[in-house]
Length: 253
Picture 1 (tube, rainbow, N blue to C red):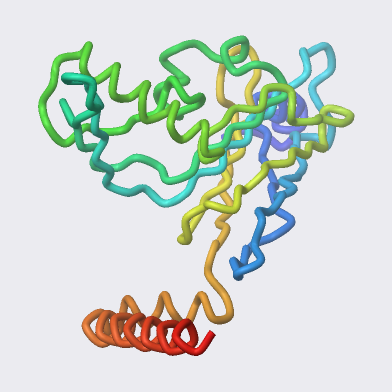
Picture 2: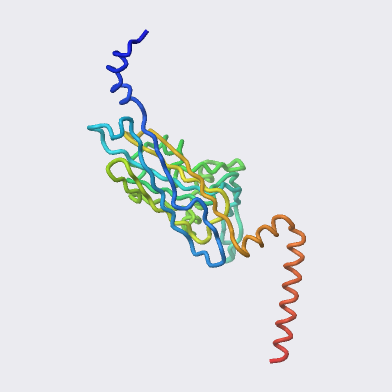
């Protein structure tokens, strides 16, 4: 049986071996998209709780990485090829689960924080995404299509990296800003925060963010989802009506 005096003697050592804990939060738990939506800026912040209430003395500062992901979706990527001066569809590859949005912010470039294996395990970085192709293809083809998909979404602002965008204060408090573009899809997003030291992930925490339509856009989206046939017939009827009205006005002018 271990005596209380021995527990007190080894308490500092036990506290030193305990891992820190992340307490993250986000400025907006819900992002509403209306007709005037031009994008949003999320502030992700939090604290690192160390055993004993302070960072271990003599240790190098901890690094923070924040990853914001949108809901995964199946996507078909087509490759264009020029034939007789005309661009036509050539090869194609479908992915089962590509994130609809991906942004990573870090206190330093991610390649300097963790090795390639750790980046692949935690999907840290655009070159470490696990996109899960649905059909068999050679490694060269998969790499080409994956690079093409990432580049397309980078150009639309749906995928990006922001090294140095996380600010850590006193080795305890951190904050980062992530921009959500106007073309962002709706659904449940996740904000993952990772604490890294000596190339190892010491702690991780997740917060959810709901991106949803509001106002008239929400009504239209619900109608299209719940009554697809009625929604389609109504859209056609309105198109015919507006066309007829436009024709009447044009004849009177």
